Image 1 (cartoon, rainbow, N blue to C red):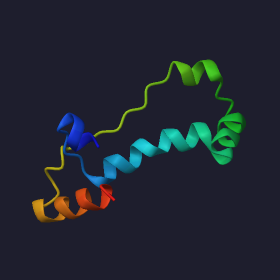
Image 2 (cartoon, rainbow, N blue to C red):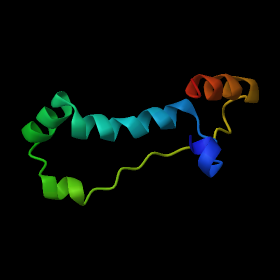
Image 3 (cartoon, helix red, strand yellow):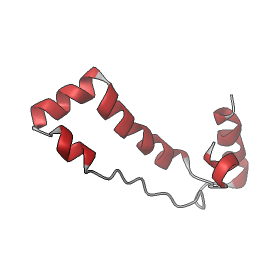
Length: 73
């Protein structure tokens, strides 16, 4: 979707990292981890999740096309 809407070409590794924050905030395991770690709702609301991407420059074009098509399914 980012390629289509924002023309951002990102590699799978950075995209996998973007899902992590969603899992942390919505899954039972993630919420349990936050509770056990003492992370408060206020801390989470002031946090910034960073996912660093290279713009796909390390992924050969033919492989990128395969990844892109898989994401379109």
